[in-house]
Length: 286
Length: 328
Image (cartoon, rainbow over all chains, first blue to last red):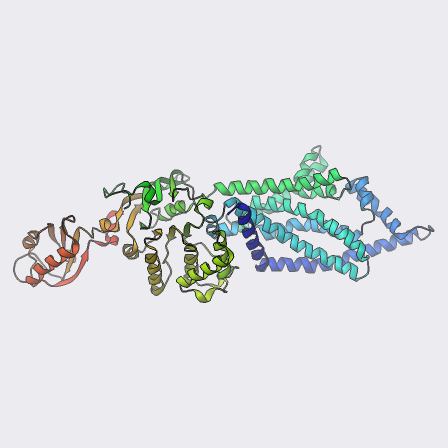
């Protein structure tokens, strides 16, 4: 049996485990219900913003509201992403962009809560011993990481779809615009979530108790965020590239080179951390 | 026959016959040496017991055989491969780990089929093999039950079923009957006996009567070292010693009711005959090359009955339990 077949079997089982556990069901429910609530909030904020822009531009004859909204949003996007990306993102619905931000911030939290006991729980109770005599340990780790990533993607996608549905349902934004920007923004979170899953797998698999694993993952995630803050405040910009969410700017860029870099960065982080987790797991006692 | 390092017993198997080989295995946890210089060989098709008191190093040795722990020194070969060579050993080795919890969210069927699939059994074969093994441990009705809802004994039997999935050439069982009720424990022993000759089985257990019943060979560990090993008959002296339990008050002599020691010593093939006060118990040793235990029992009992000695029981050898107490 080749490693990919082992990984496929372990991943399938991990997905089943995640969605069947009470923890997984509860987190998914919170995300979905929370997503619906947040979407109404974002839609309300979007409407207020549009009304303010419409009021401000009412004295200027012949100005299209969409253009006015785009012009109003552009400075914020320019501050965050630079002029080229800001220009490309300017027509995007504000509420969908806010949803992207929420997903990017929520994903690490979700990953840490879903993933912390994936390996440590099975090491603590020695269940892992049923697997290590049948599958390569590297396949076990890769399958676990892949399962966690797919779980997080499924939950966040569910959350996004609900938001898209609510926004279209209340007539805030046309469906065509939601279907243009919604999936595009969600796609940004896909490689970034993979990077967070890799980091969680590396750190979490080092411990034998789930609680230690959860604390260590939280500390590691916080450490990466601090690295990005230090990068912003100091002359060490490279530090920011350790923080997976940094890559959203590149992934939103209309420039193909930036997009490729934005995709490669998180994928490299995911591959290196998962590979390191597998290597360490190969050599340790279980 | 198991290779013997310290007992002076017999005939190591040729390398190609060995299903399991442990060579100078040592495991240290920090400064503590849990297992030191353990060497033994398990022939194909044989049942081998790892025996010893608590803390003797049985489970550590077992864990190195299963690849859970990496030896600090020495090596393990399972069918000629290191235990971590999962792909080479796939479907050829089954393991029952001690105290490993089954995944609580999986149903018994899902768990067993998943394990079978990882052994490279195709989907339908995986299901049929899982059902057959579950039948073997009398768990047919548990297929759809969540593993987390099983009692300790039921979970142990499901874990046992996974160890026998497929047709493994080597099966490693750590405390296979611990926590099982006597009826199920008996069925498990029958299951192991049925595999004799088909698979090499290594059993680590505290249950010495059980090991004595089902093992062909055993190694006795104490303080992380093998104190003796060999065939079960050698270890228990079952092929060189007969013990007769007598009623209290029995003593040497030639009068009716007394034990005629000199007549017993004169019996053909008998080497020694002694009356031990504890019991009291008559211990007769004999030349195992020239006579079997059954023949000697017949002759000894004939002499005792002629002299009207009252007999409580007869055993071949001293039993593994007594042997362990003597050694460890």
